[in-house]
Image: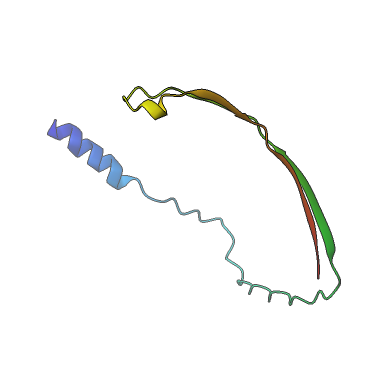
Length: 90
């Protein structure tokens, strides 16, 4: 087993990065351009609208803990819906 480990290490250490001799020389590095200055000064007006709805059904099972005033169950259902909207200007 030590021969396998030794062979694996020999292969791992003999593999190196290849250096190509026919690549051109590197050119000069360029500086990054300066960021542009924020200069927009116009008027903006916008709006949004939306609508949401849902439907929920739940069943309340009776409580059998022995408390007499809380032994009622029932089914409940809600269907909320709403409209929303608005705007902004600046």
